[in-house]
Length: 178
Image 1 (cartoon, rainbow, N blue to C red):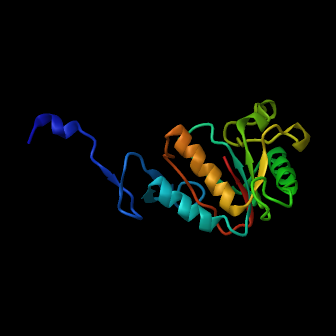
Image 2: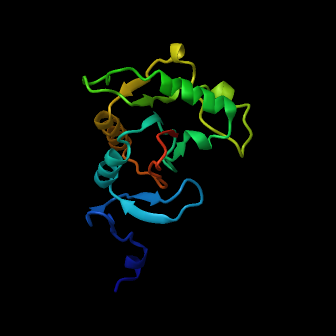
Image 3: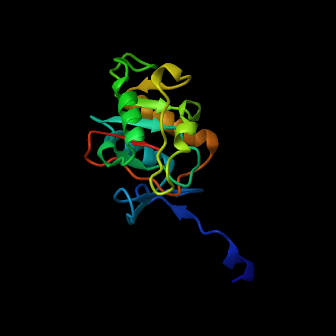
């Protein structure tokens, strides 16, 4: 055995399909302090997310970093300002997906539609992404179940990144990813 082989990265296998992937998404249970339950390739992550978002209303905020992308149920948002802005955003979901004619139930919000000024007033232990008011939106779109997962897949592939921590939606009917 060559000494330098000790320092080479070992191939990582998706725990769902078994395929080798250059980067795997670390899947955790629960909302906070969960346990690592899976390591998924992007294909398996998107397939599982597709089944998990059905029947829910979710605001997907464009990830700023790939350290984590975590679902938070609306009833667990502890900031009244963040909760009210997320509720307002979810209440404005249009009737139809921006890409097809299916009913929309999700929003994709780019970073440009986040109210960073309002976020500065939050404490470090109670920090949430805060959407701007809908009239100020520049790129937020309503999407159906199928197209929201395609949007996230395209985002991941365009950045060539993987999430170090990812949490799937729980049984709540509304929430957001940030």
